[in-house]
Image (cartoon, rainbow, N blue to C red; front, side):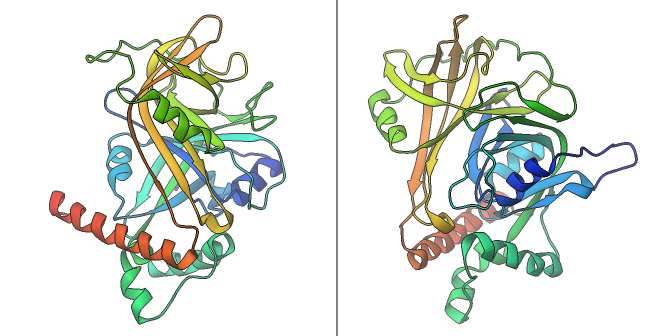
Length: 317
């Protein structure tokens, strides 16, 4: 995965335990307009420190993120939630790197990955009915390998304190962006958005950094006003000025059962005094049933439907 020209990044045992142990991560990628989208993924311990790479998997049926990554391979993974995992360190870890998508992983690779999946998500269902239902969800999985350029590890999950950096030095603060043509203000119901976020304990915001890599940092919700959602972060964690940004809020139970997630795109404005306001423009989300069998049925049907849409819009897939 790494070439002779690329000196792979080496990170500490503590950070490695987090990457291998967290059941979920926030994956961020850029948009053509200069913003960032952030969504939850299940890395299932994908970590090849000897090669300087990490990663996650997704279903080919859920291909929208793959289209964005194909246009711009600079991505980020934020390891920000410890519940129901295997890591004990309180650090918030942000990995930035370039993604390589393995669209047709070998059967050997897929089968070798099963024990890791079962460690985090429970036994893989097998049998004629399950095999048909979950064919796209399991067999059509692709691997997103991320060749690491930089890892930033803050002392705790709030993002407080001075971070430790592995790999490329930190760039300067991201430049201020011009506002969207339709304006920077909210475009959806703020009270509803705040209510949806308030019950989801894990929240991160993502934006494009000075070097083009997405930056993902933890935020708390501090209420809302006419101009947007108030975001609370440690001092200096967000750069001043305005920019396009994505926001993710989610919750999960053991084996990611009962998953609830809400993703936003919008405009982030940070005043010189550090006050951060997020004006959401779009919102989508889902709540998965807290029943393992029912969750797999839903995932299987969604993957089949998404796969059919992908074939209609991309005949070459």
